[in-house]
Image (cartoon, rainbow, N blue to C red; front, side, top):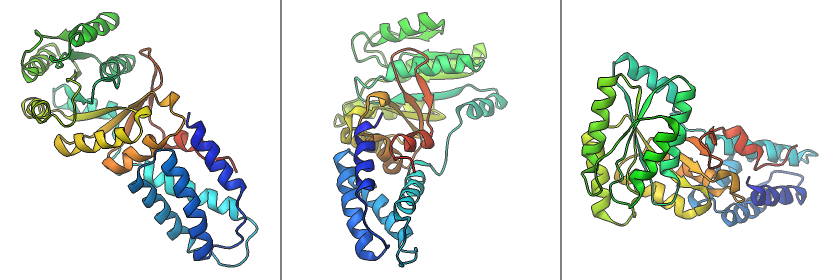
Length: 303
């Protein structure tokens, strides 16, 4: 994971020859770091933020000759990246369900993202995750647009023994989701996981349908699902979905195959929302809670 980015950063640190943290020395290092980050698909806005924060941090260091510049740089960069990757409002899914239970209500989660990013499988994985934690869920087949989508979710539900609420293709997706919520309320089910059609970001009619789903169901959480391998396209997708419907967190899939790592570094900063889960494979158990430390350990060389 992030092999290319880690090798590039390690190479840059091995070449460090500066012995002080003067403005000139910091600028020289930041220039090289900026090239590395952008080549590994870190968003330009995020790259600028990282370099600016690093410069501010290093400028407070003594400008005397230092023998441990590499260690100081590495520690400082780790602190900056940790700040970038750590959201101001983290989400604990289990706590959210417990809060909903206190209100005698299911936790309603809607999932959004373009076709092919693994959205439906992510719903199944979270259904399995909740089941393993002792919570029940129901799936809402709200993707009534793509051929085969309903059957795909139904197959996951059959494998996991989780009920799927569905209607016919072309049905009102918001109505399907509403039926699933009523089913959960009547059966005392803990969570409603709403699938939606993979949206072409520029299609205003399809985006309007997503907004209708949100208006009708009033989801407690809105998760954006993205493919880490799409790099800068992922950032533009997350930005647009956040603008149009507002997202609460992201799920990044195929993170285990991402050699660059730019998406993971950028999406939290750009959306100002946390990454909650990482998809690391194709089985129902291939889901990890997001850990900034794990991401950083895969990016930065050891001291």
